[in-house]
Length: 376
Ligand SMILES: *Cc1c(COP(=O)(O)O)cnc(C)c1O
Image 1: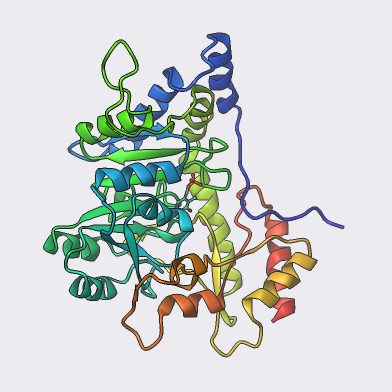
Image 2: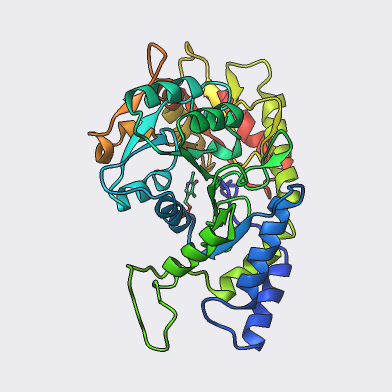
């Protein structure tokens, strides 16, 4: 039997272990430290290279903790309505609930599979009091940022950008993670670069970064004894983990190119077939974190049949993120859509994420393609 074709696994290069080695040699095996400082500075520089004002970065234990601190910085209080992406990973919206906020889900458009500005407008009509929007760029594909930022501005609302899947993606030449007032990155094991687990909060202003730093280090006040005037968290990244990140960051653009090559090969293979690829806006450059397909409406095969057939052939695939408005845990939350039927339900019922590992050989990818054609 051939070796299992995996979905999206870490790709290490050797630079990572050198930073980790240095941390061991200097016995800096603790949270905070020189690798954290370096990783933050290097990521901020990477994201802000072409911007007039640099963004500020705070390395944290996960992308989820970064979103949590972003939600706190945005001032979400118990009972506050927060307008959120619907078709995304639950980590985009769970932190809203940690703070007692009420996520209201907004349907996606078909051009990039992200928040539909028309539906967002409708959501603000129903909830004019909403002051925060959480937008995830699905599978590394940037959403309609100009329209969404414009709507946020009109309603005096803050945009939190969940760029966990979209590091190195650009929108009109500007990097995702620099559009929201507060942004989150993730370095979980399957992301475009990884630290094994970790995340980063990106902020426009230094004051927000230092407030988040304060919360992330147990809200310890400046006093010689342990003085606490607010509830705190233990969210800081370790110096070991940050070393992995510094090594990975050197290879981010290379990973993006290899992800795109995977997508382009699928795209070419499925050109005249009942499948289309996950779409993107022409003026954006996605990082192609995951390659996904959408089956034509009258296709006999269902995504889960295909998933089973691929699994039998020892190929790992994944369903599209199940929309939040379909999740039992959010059964009571409102969901706003503008088409006759929700776009998210349609994409969920016809889509599948294909193996997108950058170490997959062309021969292996051809085998994935052949297996799919055999199942149609
Ligand atoms: C991975 C992911 C997160 C959470 O990141 P963790 O580092 O796993 O906590 C949040 N949002 C989206 C869209 C993600 O894909």
